[in-house]
Image 1 (cartoon, helix red, strand yellow):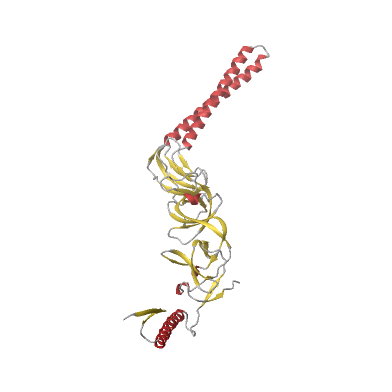
Image 2: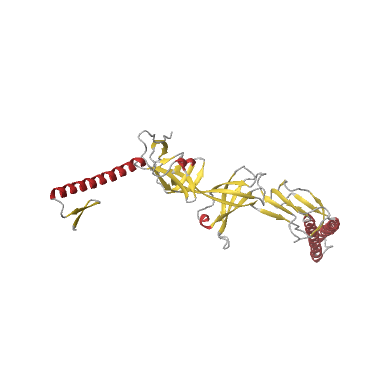
Length: 389
């Protein structure tokens, strides 16, 4: 038998050639109707799927609070850690010939004035030498006095012819030599008194005594090491270790906040010196931050610092608006179709005023301020603009 196959839509109708034309037309109509029916069913299923993806007609669209942050002036800061130290650390040691320490007059933590005696060295021998030289000065003065008297008497007799001019010259020279011996003896006495005075270990400047490494009875000598360490005027500093890239942005005069480890107290300071070199191993340099004296700032301790290196413009968001995950920091914004959209951002300075966003948004977007953790990208919401007073 011969059959003719006709494709109508997605259906195949097989028609026998020997079937009558009337019956053939009827079969073709049935096949066409079946094809139309299949197309209609497929369209209905597709429309039903779209309706299932959309919210039910009676469902409420969540209301979210959004903020258009714009641009705000924010401070650029650099964070660093480092050691606390005296701004000018003065080692104090033996200046004279040394000897046995007889007294130590100060303790660490004492404030002293310039020239104040910190410790004394036994000086019995030097005292006797001073007395001996003082006696020699008196002898020389007596000789000079006698020579002056003899010269005066000779001058009174020269007019009568009893004394020649040559005698006057000789007596004048004798008087001058005696006076010179007085000066020599006086200089020797002053030298010995200075040497004896150098046995006192004195503060080179006013300041705070930091350490003491000497006790009574100890034998000390010049070049034997520091007996005391002082902070001149009590001034302290933090030697902040700063990354090479950040070091280039710092200048003397930049303000800083220093927080010693173990303390919640913050101290205002100011950079007074930026290191001209960088450590080739750590790729860091030192920014020296001067801070006023406080008992909580102990040289040798550790501290953290936040240094203000300038200011710039950036969007400022509340902390609740910024989310984070393994991919990094992000915010949710509401696009023109009132749908949630994720936007990756880079976070800058965090302060009481908020979080500065250095990249990712321009500030003109509608940023979700809270409850962002309960939203999903593409979700339909109703934004409500937060009004800032």
